[in-house]
Structure formats: structure tokens, C-alpha cells
Length: 138
Ligand code: T46
Image 1: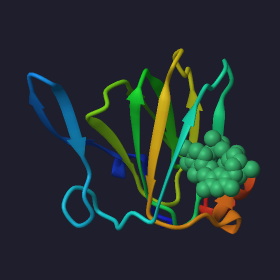
Image 2: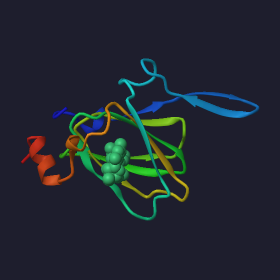
Image 3: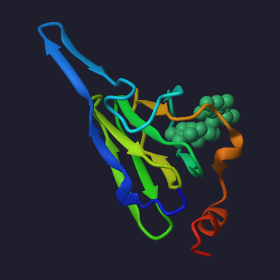
């Protein structure tokens, strides 16, 4: 998705069910998000450092702060948008082809990622100049 823009990112309300026992949220293939889930991973016990700093050529993701909070800064090479994730029923849909930085993890934060593809190191662009070339900006 070379032409993707930060405005293609969107916050998705994750279905939730509550009763006297608390809340349950669910994401189901084919119903709740615009891709098939092939992998799940999560970041936790993150100290005061930034993570991310890369783009994906093909991977689509739904990022959910299942605990605590984190700032996700999305960048399409011409514009940046910051998404503050702090609720387990809010997911950030991230299309392919966008640079992301992950900052300000709160204590105890857990960032879960539902991913459209299996792990492939070749899908990553980790150099910002290369990213700008990929987007046709430089
Ligand atoms: C992303 C953000 C939100 C694997 O071996 N398999 C995997 O599925 C993943 C995701 C990572 N790894 C290995 C590769 C590295 O040696 O785990 C190590 C740390 O990965 P990375 O430096 O890419 O971590 P982040 O936090 O910068 O990025 C990760 C995801 O890689 C990325 O897709 O969007 O979380």
C-alpha cells in the first residue's frame, strides 16, 4: 500500500460484553476487522524507551492497549497523526505502508497486535529515508 495515508488509520470500537462479572471483548475473523488474523503478538514490560520506528510493506494490524496506555505516532511521509491508546475496547487499525513510532508506554502497559501476516523480516522498512523513497516522496 504505497499510497496509504495516516488518515486511513482508524480507531475501531471492539465489541464488548459486560455484566456483573466485568467486561469481555472479542475480535473475530470476518466480522470485526478488515483482514484475516494470522498472528498475534504483544509488547509488555516496556521501559521508558521508544519502539517501532519502521513501516510494513504488506502487513495490516490492529493495535490494542489491553492494559495501560501508549502513544502510536503514524506517519505517511507527509503527515503525522498521534493516537493515544488507553482502552482495551479501542483498537487502532493500521494499513500497510505507514511508518510508526511507539512512545510513552505507561507502567504496566500491554500493547497487543493482531496481524494480517506471519512474521517476515523482509516486510519491514527500518530506514526512514528508504521509507520516503518507497512512498515516492524522495
Ligand atoms: C510493530 C510493532 C507494533 C519475531 O521474531 N516475530 C514476530 O512476530 C515479531 C513481531 C518480532 N520478532 C522478533 C524480531 C526482533 O528480533 O522480535 C524482536 C523485536 O521486534 P521489533 O524490533 O520489530 O519490535 P518493535 O516493538 O519495534 O515492533 C513490533 C513489531 O515488530 C511491528 O510489527 O508494528 O511491534
